[in-house]
Image (cartoon, rainbow, N blue to C red; front, top):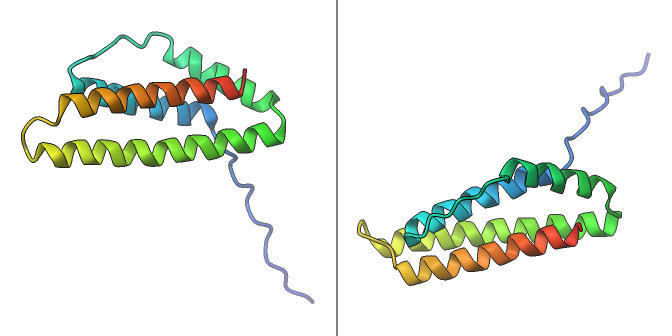
Length: 116
């Protein structure tokens, strides 16, 4: 009798809709820090559209999307952390928060543009 390891459970693939939703939440946080809260109607629709477009995209486009989404998440997190640290318990720099919000918004547009 031979002993074989059980097959590995299938790994869940990337969830582009979730990635976009998380980046939108980061954008909302940065906008609150900047004092520029904006309405983001249709966030769920956007996430669903992104997920659907991702499923239909070529593998090379999917990989590019994943790389850009991961890169964006990393620098957005670093930016939020820097804003909070720079505030030192006080109010973070509004100008820095506005700039980060603009950059994050542009990155979200780039991500959506990859799949359109």
